[in-house]
Image 1 (cartoon, rainbow, N blue to C red):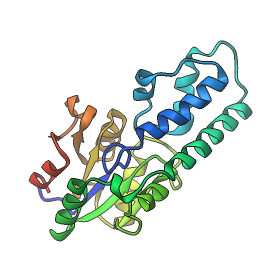
Image 2: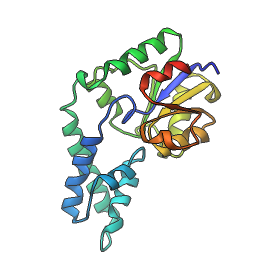
Image 3: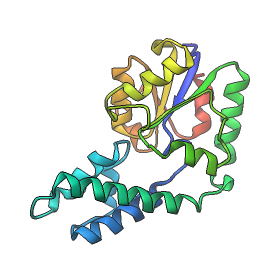
Image 4: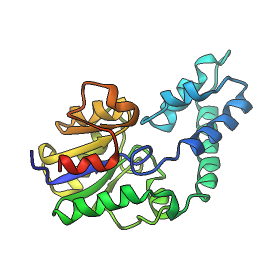
Length: 211
């Protein structure tokens, strides 16, 4: 199928900020007094900050007020944003940049569809600010993935029908969001083990086979 646009998740697809998320959430978990490890961190892929905190609190003995939950979510984000300052254009792999350029040269529109409220900061840090034709992120949506809102907004900003968009995702929640948006999805990384994906990518450049 010929696609008019490709919508990319950001974390784990265009670049990796996993280690920064992990370090920030670890600080919060230690402060609250709950266990946090790589296994729990993997469950947070592709979902929003509030939902992530609820997962971390599953082992919490007691009850946290909504006010305290908001405080910890806000504090996590402040720590995370501080850690993101360490990111550099060198954190964008040449394979990713070359593939994006080749897709663009084929006349296909490019967009970001990320639940993160820090998407624009991350893009700036890795030298991709103003590169994409549209950015739909946590700042313009009400519902996080697996709700399709972030992808539907991206297609709306591009002015392209959802059926003509291909989504690239590394998380199950993102695959489900793409399907709910009536978009095909190419899965990379952990997401490639799920049958819901139309295409499974061994590497980012495999995308050129389908666009």
